[in-house]
Structures are given as structure tokens and as C-alpha cells.
Length: 332
Length: 223
Image (cartoon, rainbow over all chains, first blue to last red):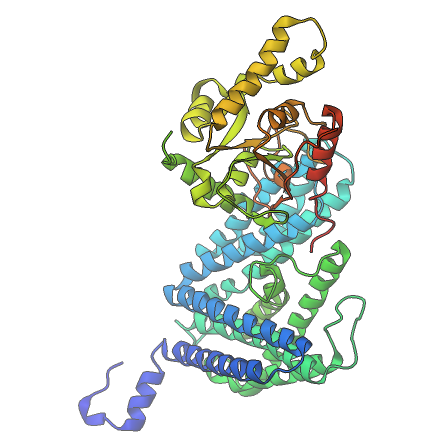
């Protein structure tokens, strides 16, 4: 599309720029950047005004989280700009690291060693490779069908029957959450959405943004108003106030971001609602696993946040649901 | 001996660190440029490399592993052990045999056992530290095996050197004995407080206490 000189008006120029494939991506990133700057400034102000020891601790943790957000956003932006392969490598690495945290926590036995090797080095990379070559059919069944029969078979071949069913189930569960579910986020890049060509990475950014903002907003609302715990035995930090406030504001945010998506405003709100509710459930399930294993976080690799899996637990649940909603209603 | 670290040692150390995702906790001491004997539980070929790579770079050139001669003396293993990591290769079981025969008449094994301690003391010289696995062999990992007596004799020979207990967690799951392919789980390495042979302590008591020192570094759950 060319803009002839005689047609030039400011309004047309803006339209022209806006229709370039990267315009919406850059605008979204600009929004993230603005948000991070605001959060950093608020962090500095809060730190100065903190009085008690406990509030200082909360604010230090908050600032650590903001610092980590800067780094995570930078990494994500970089891989998104690189394109499909960049995103695939990023999410494959996240799957790998998340699976590592999960399996470290789950008791496995000596007889599982080779099965685990397959899980880490063959099945997980293969899942992302299938996205890379656009093979949707195998991508959708590799782990639920083939890994599902392979894992118990490989453990049986190793010959150790102690806690057999538990071991097979735990490994399969980890693979489903960390590799299969999460891989649906970059799989958005292979959906052929009519009238949305070349902008799939914007949709991936939309998913991650709404999902992570929902986490942040639930945390913020919970800290501000949190009173009534939803499931005190599972996660003492999850309150009804945080949940309702976070879901409502993140849904509102999603509705306002409809310009970045193939959705109308209302559709975008419904999609965001689905993302936020699934994200909440993901956090709840992973908390239950941590509680069962007797730990607070999966690891301590991200300052202020805990482990990789602590950060992406909501995305693991939101991604497959969002992917299939988009695929069912918008790809035809 | 020069302060140069073999380039392959750097590569292997970086790889081992990445693979084991090791989280290092200096609980009872800090890294210091003084002569030490680090002693740890032994479940994996990665143990030494992970422990070694957890030390600050300037200490690595001065820290040598003690390895079993019968296992590490041939071919590529020998190259790795002697050229790359400057391992001190010792006869396995000799120290233990000598200790058992301390009061016996067997002249031969007596001298052989102390020859190993002489060799280790000499390898340390005035500068180097050692990494030592007192169990003598790799164990399955659920428990820590009984310690051989080499640690005791070495401690008696070099009372000026600090003995630092260390516990390596999860390495038996990452690369257990008998496997070639690793599984990249997250491991933890904890250094404890220095111990020494107390005046009235006999060999058996000291070995039990040093083993307990290693075991006490196990985490209860995750903190």
C-alpha cells in the first residue's frame, strides 16, 4: 500500500502508519513501558514514605518484582521482535525450566531416569518443533496421546514397580502443564485468522499481557482490600476482593485492547474474562501442588517472584483455553 | 604448579553449573583463600565439578580433587582427571586398610596406607586445597555411607588445614551412578562450618562426627 503525495493529510498518514503490521505491537509495548516507568516511580515514592518494618518489607518485595518485570518484559519484547522462532525458543526454554522446577519437587525414583531424559530432551523440544513446522495435527496429540502411552511403558521397561502409577501420573501431569499447555501460547502464531495476517504476535502479546496484568491486579487489589480468603488452605494470599477486583479490571483492560485483536470490544472483554479466570485457577492449582510438597515457591530464580513456574502458572492454564476459543470462533 | 585453569575445565564447569542449576549456600563459612579440605557426600560424577565450579574463580586454580586411581588412571578419564582438573590420584582402600591394621604387624599395608596420606599432604603443599569424598565411592543417594578413615589421617597430618563439610543434594537424580545421560533438575550445594579433630577424639568418633556434619546440611523441605 502506497501513500501518494497528493493524498496526504495528517489523518490519512496516521491511518497508513497504524495499518503497518508492527504499529499495534509497538503501541502495546509502549503501553507496557509506560506502565513499568509508573510502577518504578510509585515504588520509589512508597519506599520513601514507608514507616513500619512490615510495610517496608512489602514494598521491597514490590520493587524487586518491578525490577524483575523490567527484565522479563525486555526478554519477551526481544523474542517477539525476532519473530516466530524467537517466541518458540523463549517458550520452549520456559517449558524446560518450568518442568525442571516441577520434577525437582516431585519425588521420582532411579528407574525414572531415562523416562525423564526423554521428557526433557525429546518430547518437550519436539512439541515446539511441531509448531515451528506448522504441524497442528501432531502438535495437538503428541503429549496427550503419544507421551501418555510412552511414559508408563518406558517406566515399566525400566522394571521398578514401586509407586508405579503415581510416578507415571506425576510425570505426565508435569509434561501436560509445563510443555503441552504452555506451548499453546506460541501456537497462536500458526493460527490463520482472516483479516489478521502478519499480526499473530500481537495476539500472543495480548494473551500474555492480559494474563500477567490479571495476576498483578489481583495481587494489588488483594493487598489493598483483601479480607475474605477464597481457599485459605491452598493459598492464604488469594482473597475474594483481590479476585473480583483483578478479574474486573483485567477484563476491562482487555476490552480496551480490542484494537490490537481480531475481536470486537465485547468479544475482547469475554476473551479476557476467560483468560483471567483460567489464570486464577492455574495459580490456585499450582499453589495446591506447592502446598502438598511443603514449599512456598517452586524455586528462587526470579527476584521477588519465586520460580519460573510461579510466574507462568496462570499462563499455563489460560493459554490452551484462549487458543481453542480463538481457533473455534475466529479461524474458519 | 601454575594458576592456569585448563580451558576444558572452564567449559565443563560452566556446563555442569547450567545442567545442575546449582544453588550454592555458604552456611557455615565463606569462600576464603586459605587451605581447606572440602569433604562431601558422593553420588554422581558431577559432584566434584559442581562443587569445584561453586568456588570463586580465584580459588578454583588452587583446589584439586582427590580421585580413585583404579578408576581414573586410564585413557580419556586419565586426561580429564590429571590434565584438566589436576586430580590427585590415590590408591583406593589403602588408607582404610592401614587404619584397620594400625596395631597389626602387617608392615606392608601399614606403609602403603600412610603413603597415601603422605601423597595427599604433599599434593596440598603450602597452597592448595582438596575436594575429598570420604565415602570412597558413589552411593545411591538416599543416605550418606560410612566414611573411610583417610579423612581422619589427613586431618591429623595437616591440623593447620580447615575441614569444610558440604552436602550435595539431588545430584544423584541428575546423573546417577551408571547413567551417561543427565536429567537437568535443580540441585543445592551447602557448605557447613569447619570442623577439626578434637584432642581426645578417636578415629571412629571423628569420622562419625564428620559424617553427621555433612548430614546436618540436608535441607528439611525447601526454605
